[in-house]
Amino acid sequence: MAVVTLEEAKQYLRVDSGDEDDFISGLLETGERMCRDVARLEAEELEEHLPMARVGILYVAAYLYEHRELADHRDLVQTLRSLLFGIRREVF
Image (cartoon, rainbow, N blue to C red; front, side):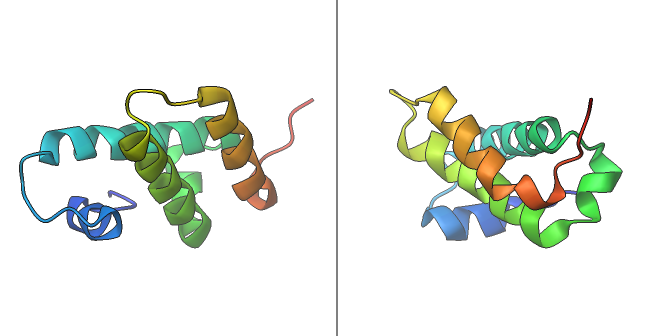
């Protein structure tokens, strides 16, 4: 199950046309993967925290959409860690 649909993402990004559907779909996949990695959760576990997962995925998609040429990935990951801190699994 997709945590965020393409239509939800397009509405969030304020994109009306279908010209960038493939690009936005890729951003959603990247966002979900990054959220799983940062939170240290499997896909099923991430879906248990749907509200936070949706915020994180939409944040990643919007950041990469708006900064597609000059994205600061370090800043992106640090902000994502802050957003997902409450659901992040501790690993020692």
